[in-house]
Length: 320
Image (tube, helix red, strand yellow):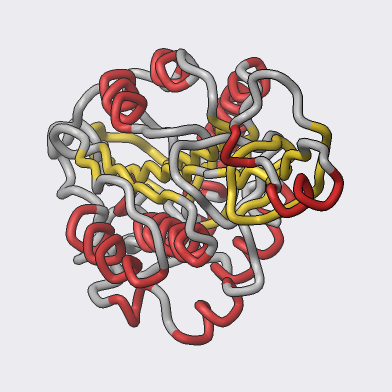
């Protein structure tokens, strides 16, 4: 990958989530394979019966029922103890983790920008439904956590957190080990619900230990969203420092994560080897996700964010 120039990422809430995007998101809701009971009242209707403001039905009183749920008007009319049944509202938590390591600056910062806009979009959907929403950023120094927020009025707060913390680190910046970062993210999660990790998953130490840490505790439907730049998916689409399409000849490549450089000769055979290794990497991540009951989605960094949310995230079950 080439990391050239200063990556362009959203610097304002308007750039992160414009009115047109917010209008599209307003029709969506978070998805989950399960319904979760939480500590705070939410707007999501669940299957469990309990205390809530929404009345559902009546049933005869049985010993041990809460006396506060008895309908005394019916008792006066029927001389029978009847209990009101309420539909317990379900409280869903959304936790989004954004990779801000140096490799996310590839593609002119489109990877970092896509991760930021996706995180903002998912946060907007969750906040509009009064779900608890939190964002974590990892990949440069220790992971940072926003804390959990609820309600549409907190979108600017989470938006500022993303804008200030999620842009990719400078090349060669030391990053916390992925496994340690995921342990920090898991410790910061509250409640139960949906977990989304936005990353290129190009960690020098690999991703297995991090995924193990992420799946160590249950209660969350976990979705891995791998974001790669066009030049990473197809080296022939990459441009060199002079703007020429494709890499060729003798070049010096510098690893964005470690800052280590290597002299290589780019040939058709080397590009084919790269493509084979990339497919191995993608399949390895795909298999690791499936083994841990996580979903896996690969998206291009230059894709339209509205289509990614409305189609790809819906297909993965993140939204509905």
